[in-house]
Length: 125
Figure (cartoon, rainbow, N blue to C red):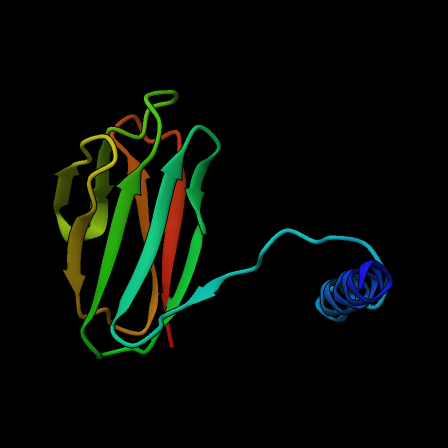
């Protein structure tokens, strides 16, 4: 029985390792996540000490979407969110999702922190 458990454990480890390799790029190196796309009509954006994750969001032009920003740290200047071209300003309380509904026109709509240091964008196509 112990030998069967060991064999099953080895098979499980091999299967998990193969699954991880399947998602690794062909060059074998990890790459930062590219732009996120809307899933349904909502897109989650995390605000941490490094900035917006993801920093670029791709959505359909002319279609309503809700961006959901969640600030996960007090580090950095992410306590406020600004869409300068849309005259939108929202406070981002720590660990509380804040919804920002938009119907973006085709093109790029920038967003920043209140100090204009952290930057992101919505690309509507």
